[in-house]
Length: 306
Image (cartoon, rainbow, N blue to C red):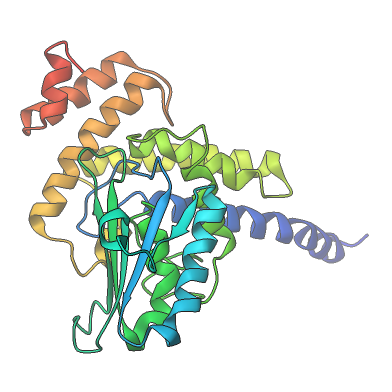
């Protein structure tokens, strides 16, 4: 076999492997980005612990009801959470813990035609939620806001209905289903930090891929690169994460708070051995940095309490 033919054959063999590795890395990046709020702050896992009782109100409901409910059913079924429509109940306003409103087209801003508000007393369990969507935008907003309603707050750039520039608006995409299954799996615990949640999300993704050894190797590389990047970011040396750059709502205060939160989350990661190898000395260093920046949870840990 000539060198030219050998080179072409080798390229043909390696191309699918390279494409799979790239796709896996892009998927992992998407899953990491959903753990960031658009204000520039990394977030903990919040989710529903009980059934969701939905009340749908607003303008021109016959035109929007079926699509809206289909979106809510898609996310709750994937997560394994019971959804009950109480819209027709006499006491719907009192018993509902999810209020979905189709607003007039002039009610919301053009740069935010739909929005979800989550109500949680602690950053663990969702107590109630409100979704608002302008009538003319409800079709493209329903699945996006349904994902947020389930507690998935980020706006990643990957192939998900959560993207600012969505790939699809009328159904969940494979990565959306991965997120929901992981978010509501027994392995995920409400209140988990990003570094605790990332392995759960990553392993759910790997379970869907054909070449699991290659996917696990890509996962380990991604974990190492992400931790390095976040250590630089928390130290004030690194650039802000891409998801923060893309957000129109990130502020200097939000980014500053995000760096402090990341310092605390890195402390948790090294203390628990989540995403990284356990290292008590590194954990202490990050807790001290977060505490000096005013993080009360880090201060409590250094004081011997949790």
